[in-house]
Length: 298
Image: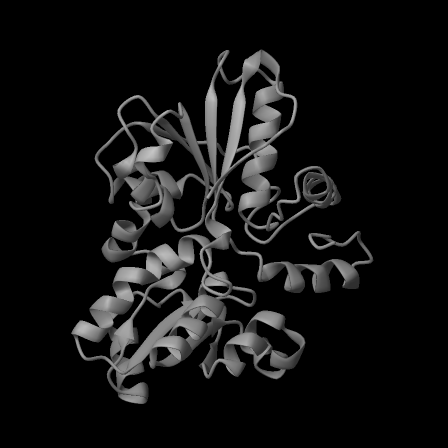
């Protein structure tokens, strides 16, 4: 569903947001796209268990947990941070995943960095038995195939397609499916230039650019300015934004419009990648710091 932003933009610029967050109540946005073909592959292989990785408020962990419950898989989540083992009931994401039947293994940040090592995976198989492995964030070739389906023939008129970037899977699918006249803009939620090389391993086209100016300090970091923007945006449009990904991307686009990045009559499509389940966890952190809360409900 594409929703026009009925806001006043200079130079006759048009901004539309693709509401991928509305695909599914619990497996929303890019998580639905990334899991689609992975779940089909897991079934084809006869797998009974899905194993994956994530952090404290991971959208991916929540989505895999619910998808497993819905489609009859046992699910295992390796969670970054041993200290979280005693805080499940205080963490909305982990509590939800556990209620969906996911089993957890909490590991140190040091060991978490080994998650792609074959010896580490072998040890997991000795402990948990056979499983279908889904990478952190869900990004692999099958995930990218799913993300290629985000753009449709109804999106052909847009000059720019914009999305937030985490592990690089979503933007890779969009880059591969964008038309020759379209430029894809990615807004990393993490600091650093490593994503450029990561995305290049998945795509061949050069119709894209990463905008590094709107990460707000890095992954999971937000500021009162961003909270105010998300709240004001909801009041104006009734569109909720998550603070980790889409909220930062939309903030960036609005700033770039003000700075005349886009040409006259430009048509811009923003991809809402979901992630709204993470708002509750972020509000817990904001409340503990006595900062303003994100308000995306009437």
